[in-house]
Each structure stands twice: as structure tokens, then as C-alpha cells.
Length: 239
Image 1 (cartoon, one colour):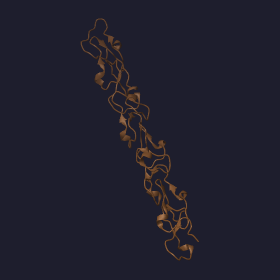
Image 2 (cartoon, rainbow, N blue to C red; image 1 turned 45 degrees about the vertical axis):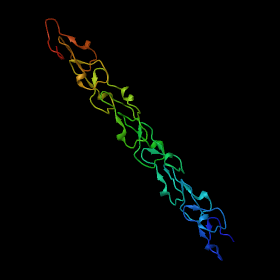
Image 3 (cartoon, rainbow, N blue to C red; image 1 turned 60 degrees about the vertical axis):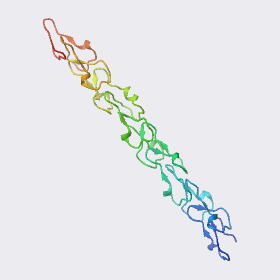
Image 4 (cartoon, rainbow, N blue to C red; image 1 turned 180 degrees about the vertical axis):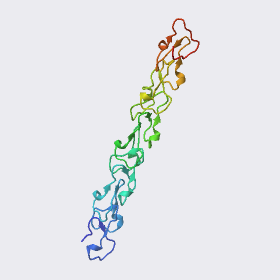
């Protein structure tokens, strides 16, 4: 009788089937009557096989999602390589690292072996990120001074500019997430532009005027000193 599939036998005069040798882990063999270990085929790249004496290629297991494997004849799942940080991979049986997909701009990913784009984290409010495949939240760039940004996962600095602090305000910090971070120009001052980055951007009411409120947006908010009075300074806050 012939040694069955998944087996071979190199000697002569063998009298029992148990003397047929099994193809090793990571291999299979579809034919019968094979005479050497060289007749056993290796499991292809992207696969592994933990048993011996396997008879069909289907006995080779696919490396799972989030992994790839470039070699042949691998013998356990640990031989499958993990996609790196900043990447994910949704399929199985992948044979090269390029099968790992990069997390999109506006996102980052710190782990390895991730299986879905949903595993990529969004850059937080007050930040943006223009590149792909980023591996840490530190790769997200803070919106600059004079701006804030309320959304997450933003992909350009222009998304910060849309939400510049308005007239009558300024903002000295970076990475701010709400309009409340924009500070009001104080009494005796006004400011007509947007996106201002320092209190010095607030303009003083001129001599002969005063202004009691804050956050004023034009020089018309400065009131004239009344009849019979004069005032030589600027930025005065009471009549």
C-alpha cells in the first residue's frame, strides 16, 4: 500500500503504515506514495500551519487581520507579523507589509496589529494633523494663538483659521478648543480685527474719550468727555 497524503517514506521493505513519516509543521502534501520530505510543500506566505501530516493546502491557516507574513512554511500564528503603529489591516492572509493601511490625516494610532480604521484615534479639538500613518497624539499640531477649534480629526491648519477669535478679543494660548478662550479687550480699549494674539492688539480710546465696557469692536464705542471737561490721556475707563 502507498503512504497516504501528508506522508512520505524513504526506506524499503517497510511493512506497516505507521512507518510512513508525517510532513512537518508548516507543510502539507496532497499525493500518495511519496518517498522524501522534499515532496512536502510549504504553506505559502501569509499562512501558517501548526500540525503535521497535513494533506491539503487548505490545512494552512491564514494570518489574521492586522497581520502579514512574508515567508513560507511558518509553523505558528506567532510567525505572523503585526502591522505597526499608525496602521491597520482588515483582511487575512496578507503577504507583505504594504498591505497594512495608514491611518488618515487628522488621526493617529499608538498600537500594533490593529484590524480596522476605527482603531485610528482622532486628533483632539484645538489641533490638526496633515500627514498619514501618525503614531501618537503628539503628532497632532496645536492651533496657533488667536484661534480656537472645536472639532476633532481636522486635517489642515486652515480649519483653525475658520474659528479665529473675533473683533474685540485676543487669544495668547495654543491648542484652544472654544470661543471662551478668547479674552475680551478691557475697558478703555477696542479692537476691530480678528485672530489677534496679544492684549497689545487692543487699541486705546483716544484722548478726550472714555470707555467703560469690555470687548468693544470699534472706536465709536469710546464716548466723548462731556461739556466743561477735558482729558489728555488715552484708554480712560471712566468719565
